[in-house]
Length: 379
Image (cartoon, rainbow, N blue to C red; front, side, top):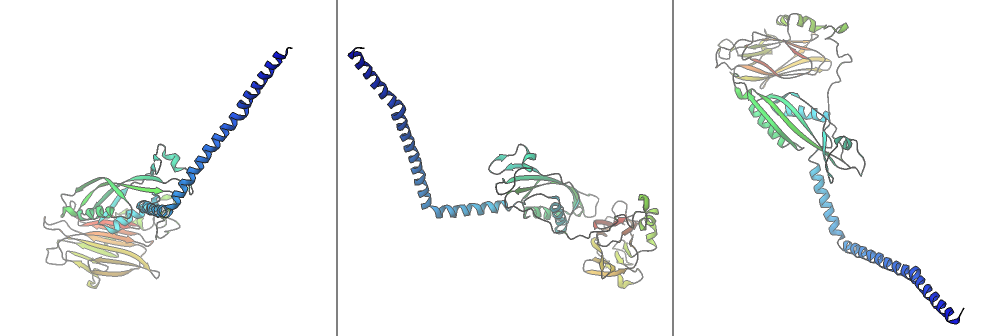
């Protein structure tokens, strides 16, 4: 090989070494340096951002606290769930606070419709069985209670005010009202239906409300005294059912006499545990519907019946195996005859209460049971 060729080869080899060095050593190093510079810049930016935030640390803490407090205030307007026990106690509270009686209401399953921070719910069942714990989302649920009611017009207005000022937010999506045109006082005899919408927000730190219920456990045998063997009716109910309570007229614990208040012989309303003893009387001479409260309670192992109209009240011990009430009414004389009673009966004992109503006005009864609890039957 000529010396000139050797020189050419050496030059080419040197060029190849230079190129390879650039490609496999210098260029990767440059790329690495650029990457390190970019990473260093990102870290510097992050550092500068954290330093800036550190300078405003107290402001951020104060704002976060304020936002959390506002969030808690909003969430506190809604219960943590819509359990049926609490719903029943709410419906009971409505009746206790207002002249409003829930004749019937439905309690369907509540449905999740929104997740805070995520949006509307496509599959409520998946949300209902979703994650729990500190990382669980806040889930909004709703329920619509369909209520059939009766009460006075004033009671309905009080009911609307009760819902508007209730501790939890609710909404009424529909409200129907009608009155009894044939009633002595139409606005005292209203009825209709309501669809009440309730809402809840479940999530971290939210504890469902546990209702406080104080109700007697009842009997070990729920059929005792009313059902005999083989599922046939027995006990006191048998004798009263057989004649539609007619036997109560001759033997009873309480008598209620309802007549025209404008007569000259006696008070229009008389309630007594002993008809022959005026010392047991509770009366009214008003020509209007009076509220009659009857309660049957146990005290020191003894049973008592307490009856009250207005500020007049009487009490008598019950010595029989059940409580019988005889209502002796009469037809109304004319449109001015407004006399009658709106009755509330609370029976907290194991005794049965059996009421026989005789000769009441067929179109506008004087005797009306508006509310009752415990075992109560009217013939």
